[in-house]
Image (cartoon, rainbow, N blue to C red):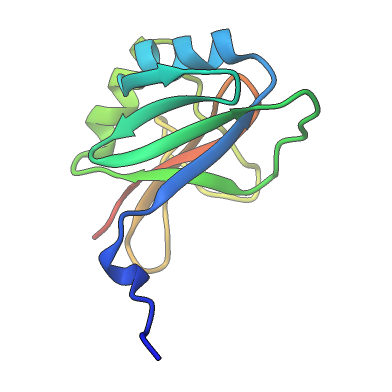
Length: 128
């Protein structure tokens, strides 16, 4: 029996939106993702060679955990750039975050969270 080797296949990321127009504006103009297409089912973006499909849905409740994140080389520069474009970074009372909203994890990774227009929780991470 032939084994399936998904390790050799590119993943596809999925999110959901109730407002495709707002989502397209956010992901294309604010985050700078390359827009590919818009059909009756989803918005499609290229994220550094990985497909992101933002599914168009009528009913949606965002999760309260991170659903998509980026590994960045310089989290301070990225949070500053996104803040200038209107992104507000999430603050959590139980976390010790700096003035940029960046938390340093026990393993040294630096993480900042923000939400898209639908409330999807996104993150930036700079690994130690």
